[in-house]
Image (cartoon, rainbow, N blue to C red; front, side, top):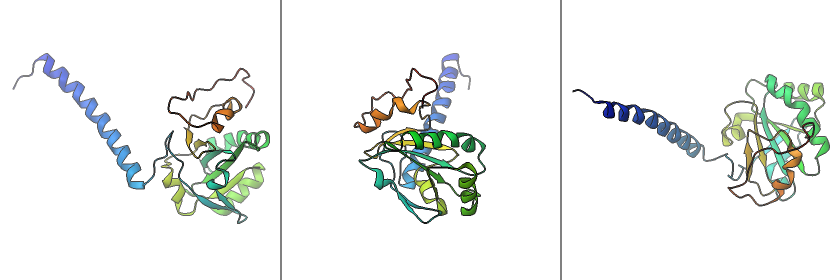
Length: 193
């Protein structure tokens, strides 16, 4: 069988389209199998975890009160370590409007390593341990750091791509979410948070 040029082109166009469709279908199946979706505009999956000191940390505690900057991390993740000063500064400057919560995925970390990290880096935000990776799976986290901004209504506003200049966006996180919101950072002062 001989194919002419239009037939060849249609075959080439069809294959990438099929691959893209397969990728989308796989993502839908993965999130539906986990029972949770954790994308922009979704309600953030609930969780309650413990700090190394035994303090309970629940996402529900902040609903209607504060936005939550949620980060999934590990002690061995160099980029996570590099971002630690940012989280400390956010917790210092915006503690009345944003709660910073760092969930350790437990990928090769122990609670003792988290305590050591907390002491070494003098963190002022909540570090919790996700024993069994239950919350990590609910949020469909596959790499660290993975960051979320959750507004006061419990809606995910960002999944990664969190604006560098958070201060300019805080008022938005206290307003009802609409799908047409523009998540692009806009801040005149490049040194501001």
